[in-house]
Length: 612
Image (tube, rainbow, N blue to C red; front, side, top):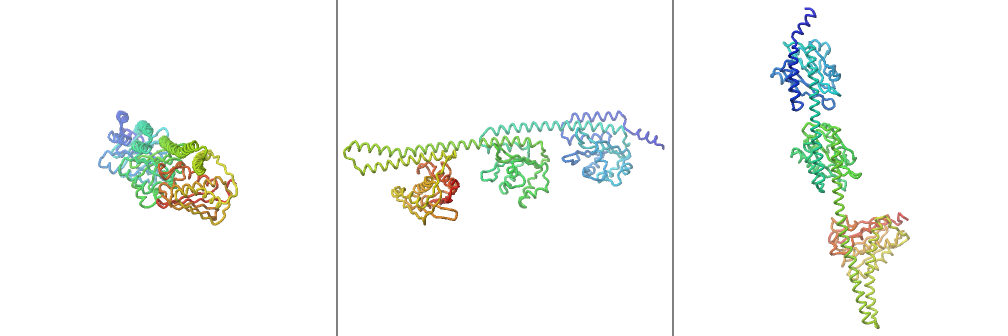
């Protein structure tokens, strides 16, 4: 038989134009009417190909992330052989062997093998595994048709005919290419529709999250609500972590579509909390202030993030597939981090998702910062009101006896104008001087706080003997110690000379003595002056009520007190000023105490002030 007769025989078995038009018409209806998912749509198209006689079997592959190919459809006219066809391996873009399937994917040009067994063996000496497996279905003729999108090849159709069907010709190739163009249009429309719906869901999520963040100043409750709103719209798992003042990281909120996985996320935070030195996750993001995106979380990378074998098992149980972490930043500082993750839903984050995460993180950070500012302002108002109440009381306290003594003094002078009792007058004057001194001290304390706030505290330095200065100050407190039956025990081995401001150093010693007499009344107060390797040390210890451990760290703060203002006077400024004066000398002060066993204050001073 001549070549021409072979061509006539082949064309005589090809589908008629009417069948081709009927097939394309059915395909068009299918593609325009279907509103199902992408996989379902492509399976329906593959089934149409086998049902309408275009192919004995049909394989459809799509290009996934990073060029990975995944099979989405495998249909055969014979239902008994369909399971075998589905088990057929897919090709990989990393193959280096000569592979016509990869040529079609890379070039976007369709291939026709009219006599597949002969032509394929002529072109490829050693068949790749997917093509070798295809031979089990005895393909007589094969079409490889790419799904060409606007920017790249989205995937490929593999259409095959087995005996006794007629081989493919140019007309079937044109029909297959037209089908591929319509499928690409439907796929891109479907993806556009899906992106639109996803964008709408994200917009609704941002709106609802913003509403939640602005509804309350309790940022812990609002962040918890935001984490729950994120699931499952933009994540399977959402966590929020906050940086504490001591540098630790604490988890505030967890949202997960599976309650048991939410419990696992809490357990991970409890047993293996995030740390600033971590190489991955919230700790790294909070430390660096930069977002972190992992489009794919390969299982082989988890051991790098795990701290031990048990931690690794817990991480694997979480089934992370993809995640991104965005920092919560406000006014130039990082407050924490919000994490979105896909776990078990076969979804992956892209760089475009960072915009949503950063926008939400910015709004969440603003809400947290506003809440913290509001809390700080309320605390400042509370401290101000408390201070004003205490200051008012403290300023009135010396005025009352001062006024009474003046009235008494006036009556005695009016009654005994010619005869004045010198002893009585001396007693009145002593009380008046003491109360005036107290008023002066209170006023000076307030002025010193003001000077500290604006950085105008100046030192007038001179060479001083700390031992002599302490003895002098103690002598001034002798009267108060006598009235409260509090012995003052001073021990100084010898002169300790340094370069200090006399008035300010007297203020430090007076503050510590006054504190010891107030809280240790009736018990001995021990004062020790000694020279140490780094300079001078002053120790003032009482045997009074002591300080509770929870109050000890804050006793040197402004307006702070370890006891109730109702039972002990003072503005809460003595130790605050003392600390700043000691630090101005370049020294340090520390306190130790046990409730019921008194308190000890140690001041260490260099012999030369840094401002000298």
